[in-house]
Image (tube, rainbow, N blue to C red):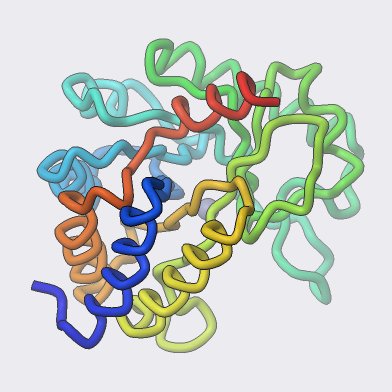
Length: 255
Ligand SMILES: [Zn+2]
C-alpha cells in the first residue's frame, strides 16, 4: 500500500474534487515500444488489473507483426506514432531531436507519413492519429503540416501552450530521472507533482493530466510507483483514468 505520508496529500486533493462533484482525468502514455518484451508484459498486466487504458507510443521503423500479435487480446491499449526511427538528427550542441534539426522538412514529413501508414496498417483497430515526438520535441514549423499527413493530435510534455493546428494531449509527470539516477524518481516527488497538477486543474485548466512511462527502462522504483498510483486511484470517485481516444473525442466535441 502507498505510504500514508504520500497518500494523504493525494487523497486530500481527490476528496476535494469529489466533494465538489468533479472528477479529475488522468491518462497513461508509455513510450518506445517496438516488440513484445517481459517489461511490456508487466506493463500490460498491471494496467489490465486496474482497468487503466494505456497509449503505447510505438516506433514505426522497427516494429512489426510480433507486437500486433502480443496486443491482440489487450483491449485497453491504443497505439500512437512515436516519430519514425527515434534517431537523433540534431547538431551535437543541441538537444536530441528527430523531428527538426538540419534535415529537409520534406524528409522529416515523408518519414512521419511512412510511420503513420505503417502503424495504421499494423494496428487498424487501436491506432490513434496521434504523433508523439521522440524526446517530446518537434520543430514548431512542422506542426501546421501534420494534419495533411493524417495526424489529428499531438502529445508532448508539459502544460499545453495552446497550439491549435491539432488537438493536444500532453504528458505532465515523467516517472524517470533521466539526468540523475536514470531510474524511477522518488515517489514523494512524483505524488507532489501530481497534487500540483490536480490543484491547477481544479482552478480551471481544462487539460487531462498525463503520466509518462518508459517500460523498457523502468526499475523497481518506477514499477512500484505505477502499482501504488493505480491502487490508490482506481477506486477513488474523485478521479478517473481515461483512454486517449476518449479524451480526444471530448476535446473535439467541446471545441
Ligand atoms: Zn521515445
